[in-house]
Image (tube, rainbow, N blue to C red; front, side, top):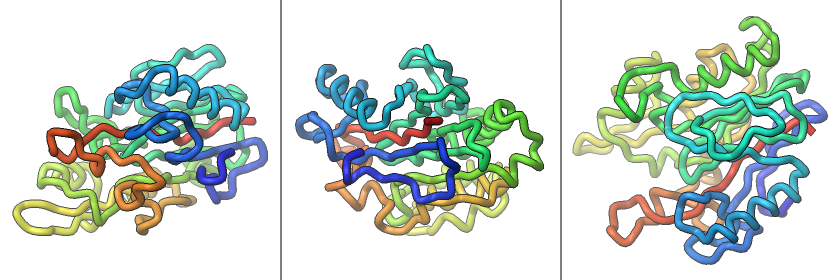
Length: 273
């Protein structure tokens, strides 16, 4: 593993491995410098392929890259599952196959059990976390709830057992000092999650600062998961505030100056060794 990559500090059992890549350790040129793993952001395909090969060499597992659509679909991974399947979460019991989520501000959530028999990863942007379908705006099961249902099924556990035996880790994401949202985002969370209003701070002109990691913890706790590690919403976890270490879609404004720009993608990976 590259020295700058994050290895989760959590009580995962032997045989469960996880990593969160940073900007460091790859071959891509600016603005994708250097460990860009996204093949949809304008980087040279050959460099993306080389970066993905470097990841596989470092982990010893094959990462399956999803086509993330800010929804709630969950994909069960097998040894031959191809890249590019539309989903925002994945689960597996297949060894050496890494559940992989790409991010550049959204929150990656990793799950395993204390037995180490199944792993899962979820891409928690605000829509998926709140349970809003990006295509038609209809309320749906949130991505964490959907991933957890599939996770429990593969683990062959009842909900009461799963709540005790599940371990979660939250990776870096846009922090609560940088995630400015409108009232529709606050309303979407309040409609589906009691207590969500406490994770929004009004800043005037109808705008709020939202704590994405805090909202994810609230959602996981509502599912019965209490053993949650990683991102505590402090400054070191913020993708926007740490430009030398993390890519940030919101920070790296494009030529149009709209606040959403060209940048690379990092990955959170979890696998059974």
